Each structure stands twice: as structure tokens, then as C-alpha cells.
Length: 125
Image (cartoon, rainbow, N blue to C red; front, top):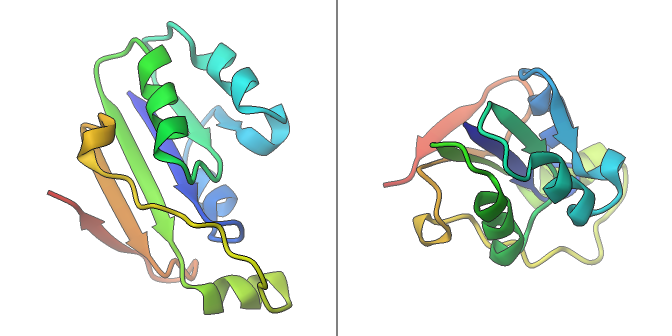
């Protein structure tokens, strides 16, 4: 299964990704192309973590992965919580579009206001 953990900066993606083994972090790879190279043609379980705010970027991941199932976990953390984590006011926010099934996902999990203490799972249908 391909699992993508995505969301705004400071949404809690890296902390949440610690629940998984062998995560490919976009920040560590420094480019989407390097991440795509790492997952291209794989059929085993793969976890990718990064902002991925554009549907087209998320679709590229699905396209190069050759396994059977895909799952997108989106941390939809409020601006207020992200500002608290950042330590200052966010002046420019990414125009983040929540993932949808038209992108090609088999499963989508939206986690609202992940404050690292209580996580609310909402599975879109």
C-alpha cells in the first residue's frame, strides 16, 4: 500500500509519520522528483510524508506506484494551531485542496485539528 501523509506546514505530518516505519520525507529528499524515483515501480508498503498541496502532485505519486492499494492521510490542522506551533503569525497560507477520490485514492482519512493529544479520524466517502 502507498500511504501519503500530507497537509499544511506545521500541521503535524512529521510527528504523525513516526507511527510508520521507513517513511520517505519530502523535506529530506529535497524534491518531488527524488521521491517519485524512490517509489517508482514499487509494490511493497511505502509511506511518503510532505505538504503535497496540489492534487496533480498527489496523482503523480499514485501513477508511479505499482502496488494495489493507496491511502491518503491528510492532516487538516487549523491555522491557529499551526501558528502556535510555529511561534508566530502565518502571513501567507498555501491554498491547500483536500484530497478527493477523483485523484485515484482507494482510501482517504482526514484528521481535523491534530493537536498531538486527540486525533479525530473522518473517512470520506
